[in-house]
Length: 314
Image 1: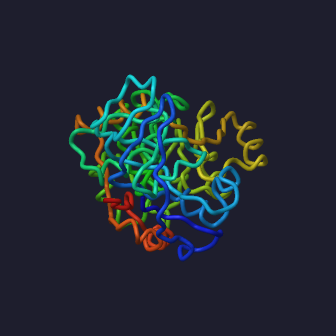
Image 2: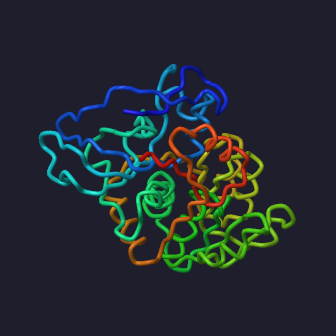
C-alpha cells in the first residue's frame, strides 16, 4: 500500500511517499480502506519532534490519526461493524495510528459509522477536532444551557466545531478570531466574536463559565483565567498548564485543567447525530493528494487555516 513516512524529524520536506505492507486486523480489530485522512496541528508538531513524538519513538513512522473509509475486513470478535460499512474515527491516539496510508487497522470501537450527509473528505476532517471539542464541552466541562463559553482560536479545526457544539448545548458562545472570520463564525452560531488583534479580552466578554484555550501560550491562559468567574473552568489544550498560572487561578477560585483527546467511538456516534441534524457542519478549506502531504503541512503551519485540511488518499 502507499503511505507517507518520514525517516527523520524536521520540516514538511521529510514527508515522503513509500510502498509498505498492508496491515492485517487482529481479534477485535477492523481493517479500514482509507479514503481520506485529516491533517491536524499535532501531526505537524510530531513530524518536527514535538507533539506526541515521544510516544511514537524515533522515525521512521507514519503520521496521522483522522480517517474516513470503508471496512475491508474484520477480526474475530467484532460485532459492531461489518465489511462494507462506511466509518470514521481517530484510532489509537496518542499512539501511532499511521493514518496517512491506504489502510489502517484498529479496534472496532475506535470507529463509528460515518455521518450519512458527509462524504469521506468531509468526514475525515471531523474525528480528532470533533472529539476534542465534544469531550471537553460535555465530559470535562459539562456545559449547561445559558452558560457563557469562550473558544480561543474559534476559526480553527477544533475551534469552529467547539463553537457549534457549545451552541447546540445551549451556551452563550464567545469566540476569538481575526476580523475577516467574524461573519463566518457568527454564521456558525457564535453570539460574540473578539478580534484578538485589536480588542481586549477583559473588556469584551464579561465573566465566563468555561474557556477553551486552543492557543496554548502562557499569556493567553493568564488572560483567560482573568475573565473566568470563581468556580469556572479554563481548559488548556495544546501545551498544558504552567504551574504558576494554575496556582494564581486557584487563588481566584478558577480551575485550570489540561486536556488530551482519546479515541471514543460512542462519542463519534453522538457527533454524527449532531452533524446529520444540521446542528454542526464541518469546514474543509483545502484538499491535498496523499503524495502532497508535505504541502498540506506547509499550509497548516502558515497559521491562517479556516477549518480543516484533508488528504485525499484514493
